[in-house]
Image (cartoon, rainbow, N blue to C red; front, side):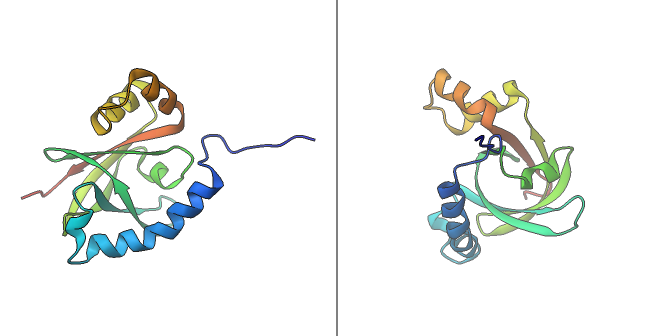
Length: 144
């Protein structure tokens, strides 16, 4: 008997947990109470390359000027819509912004992004994460 697993797929319980929390986080980030979570979380609206369907997702971010860095599991598929660069909508601290997004599976880029987002992680911890995540970069187009 053999079992197959999807490479880089987050554990089932984690996917279910995220799926149950996401609606609350979307509501919270768009509500007047957004300040409770919006220093660390933002909403990203991505359009599917093939389907044209829009996906709105809450993600943890690290901001450097007009650039927002995000790490996501490579097992999720939404980020693949921005792999080659794509326009997205960001909802950040109660305001909507157009942004240009790119995604990378390059180990050096991922390691650098992990280091920015989680400076307390040791090199071994970052190295363990690199194979299972993607680094995303969102450049705000109108941050004034």
